Image (tube, rainbow, N blue to C red; front, side):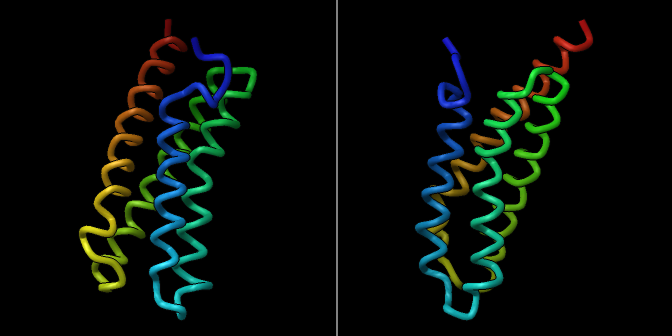
Length: 122
């Protein structure tokens, strides 16, 4: 039974991604401390935060809106991880776990948005 956001698998996986991205950011070059590193941390924190805030809202319409924001932040994190690969800041083996989690989270968010949207139309 889902009592609050902490019971949601998508929130739990988002927190796992948060930990993984924070671990990866430590490997980035020092000159990226206030650029890419900061942006990655802000974006990854936004994913579980928006899921939690949406779940705490009083309407499903609000919940869906926050899930869309979480979905956008997830895409941002994925893009930043891929940028790190292209810039040779990280190796494929470094980002494999984070990209896998990101993909899982994307599927879960899409499913949640779809199912909640169906409920609104009913």
